[in-house]
Image 1 (cartoon, helix red, strand yellow):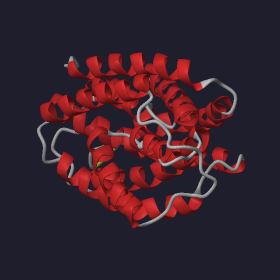
Image 2: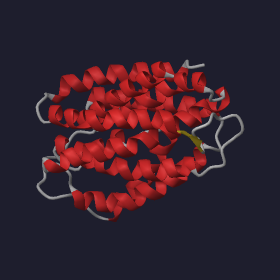
Image 3: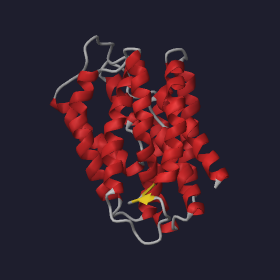
Length: 265
């Protein structure tokens, strides 16, 4: 049990660092690791992918709050944009989790692996490119509509949506560091809706004690505890480090994450 706790804390530290630094990838890393780890904690193999998604999203609630708070203190969260995105994010996150629990675990595994590959390609190619920097915060009903798609896909692959929200905002002329900050706040809404959707499902037979629906609470708590402490460090690094080289390295890492999910037992 102690070794499992140590692993959850290490995972949380990594996810928090990535959330603050890139606004992307923490959830994908968590899902990939949890797909391998949760069967050893008593989660039946046929429910491991669903439980990994649910547990990752539950932990992202606190990770996102910590990251968003750190970015807000540096003035890098565009709250008017968040307000337009959130209605769609909440609805999409809820509906996406409802769809996910009805899909076979292998289908979800292939979807996650494929999404990792697409996210890796997007980061490596740095696409889409910015149209030119803007001073105002993007807003309008189109962002609520986009939020619905972002929320639904995020719930299906277990992420806070940064791999979609950040490129969207950068394409619309938002500075990358402000896009990351805004995305971190949006991730809280996605994670809340999706985790509630997974948690309120009737727990299938065989899930270990400490489960809330498909959420394995001991893992979610350990991950969240460490991620809350690590996210501000990632935020500080985001304001200091050069982006292109970091993005290429992480793109390669995401590709490996996708391969790991695909070959998980």
